[in-house]
Amino acid sequence: MEVDSLVIIPTYNERENVQEIVRAVVGIDEHRFDVLIIDDNSPDGTADIVDRMMGTDEFAGRLHLMRRAGKLGLGTAYIAGFKWALERHYGFIIEMDADFSHPPRKLVDLQRACDLEGADVAVGSRYLTGVNVVNWPMGRVLMSYYASAYVRLITGMKVRDTTAGFVCYRREVLEAINLDTIEFKGYAFQIEMKFTAHRMGFNIKEVPIVFVNRVLGTSKMSGGIFGEAFFGVIKLRLEALFGNKKFRRRV
Image (tube, rainbow, N blue to C red):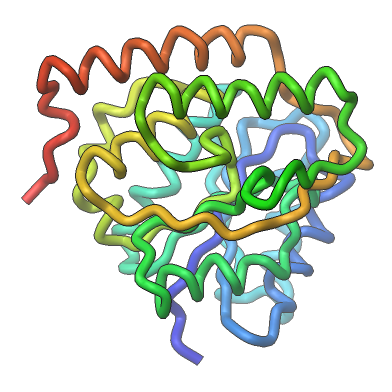
């Protein structure tokens, strides 16, 4: 089976989830997905668990680990993972959470959307067919839903779930983007990546998913992340209006 797809999973204190999420991804039969765990020096030993798994026959050559010095932000973790994947010539690079909020079986649909259905970027969307979120407090559902509506209004993107973190990129998209110009670290990172791809003319397709709030472990969300997204969207729009070169494709 051709090795062309990598799933990048950032972790911080995910010892309750990391073994099972890796098993769920590697165990998919329809398509081979390798896994890169990017751990920000989790004090609960998440990286050590992954390291031990890498030494077994079950995961040999399929599971990889990047250890970082500390909590450097979700966006910087994904940028580091993107660069790692491009250096190793993966054709499809996928973002995914460690806590099972993103259904592993939907990895096949995201990859297929980019490989066979004409998408350059495939987004696992909570809001394409209504509000498909389970076990979130109503306040958080409303905040997330209307945050995406706000982003659509400001940016002009048609994407229903602009803050989604379950995303598949064709390698050509990540090669075209100057990853060193991506500024944001939280929710705004997800918006910035989609908006940059949109401004460059890449085709973004949404794939409906049901998002389930984590059962094990602790959420990493904070008010500062929402603040970054709110003001970051305005900054992105102004940069686009004034012709910032970050939105030009790399040759």
